Length: 188
Image (cartoon, rainbow, N blue to C red):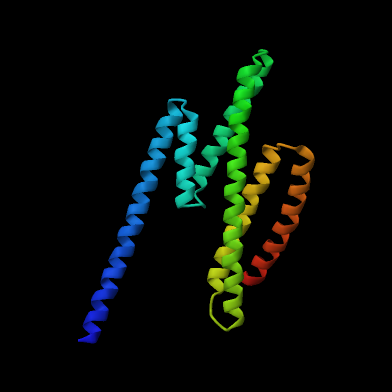
C-alpha cells in the first residue's frame, strides 16, 4: 500500500511540474506576442516591459535580450536625431529612456550573475563531496559565460561613463577568460 501512495504522489508531482512548465511556456509566449505587438505600434516602453518580464521568467531568453537591445538602440538613435534637430527637450527624454533601460538591464544581469555564481559554488562543493554534478557545473558555467558576455555587450555598446565602462570591460574580460578556461577543463 505504501508503494501505491508513493507512486500516486510521484505522478501528481510530475504532472504538476509539467503543468507548471506548460504554464510558464504559455506565459512567455503571451508576453512575447504582447511585446512584439507593442513594438510594431512603436510603443517601446510597453514592449520593453513585456520583454523584461520574459527575462524575469527565463533569464537566458536570447530573443528577449536582443529585442531589448534593439529598443535601447532605437532610443539612442532618437536622442541623436533630436539633438541634431536642436530639440534638446526630446533628446533628453530619449536619453533618459535608454539610460533607464540600460541601468535596469545591468542590474538584472548583475543579479542573475550573482545567482549563477552561487549555484556554481554550491555545485563545486557537491563535486568535492563526491557527487556527480559535472554536467550541471558545465551548464552553469555556460550560463555564467553568457551572462558575462551580455554584461560586456552592454558596457561596450551603451557606455554611460566611458572610463568606468572601459575598466568594467577589462574586468569582465579577465573573468570571462577564467571561466572559459574552467569550462574547457570540465569538458575534457
